[in-house]
Length: 64
Image (cartoon, rainbow, N blue to C red; front, side, top):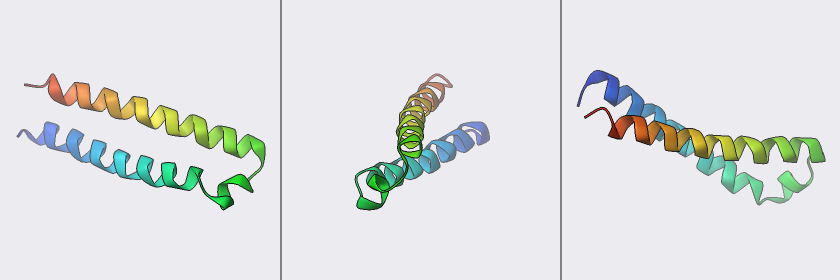
């Protein structure tokens, strides 16, 4: 695996871990106690992280 592809794969792994942690937090009582604007922003962030993960996956697949 090329060094560049390895770096992209590591970036995707880290992103997916952070997205998973955020997803878990979204269902907690602490999340529901946040101001509505913060909840909305975190939900948006979660969606963007998912889109970014898909883009990274496509970039990795098209390197071969």
